[in-house]
Picture 1 (spheres, one colour):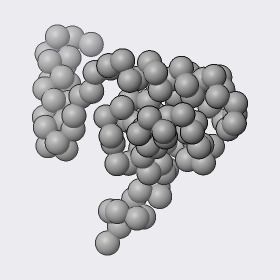
Picture 2 (cartoon, rainbow, N blue to C red):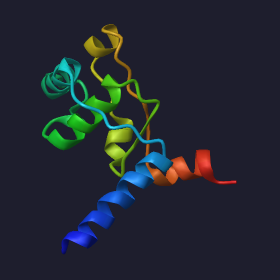
Picture 3 (cartoon, rainbow, N blue to C red):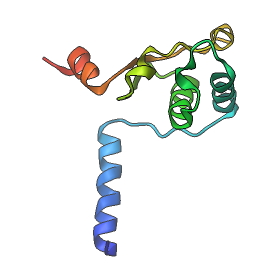
Length: 107
């Protein structure tokens, strides 16, 4: 990619993030606590071995996101460990992009 195309691409991404009012999140210690708890809890085994999913869900939970979009239907049914609920962490409403479209965007 030549430098002009790369610069145009970066500018368009930043413009879209601003237009969408997107937020960029950085990890804190709660992300590691959430990931560890989800990886060592075997009550709901859907997250065992799902490192990327755990990290994404942990970010959303640590930032109190209201909605989490995923194509992984198993993740929509995942139950977070009781110890996390007791520590006041809650799983956001988790749905597929299609379900989000139907529920919130379709007119």
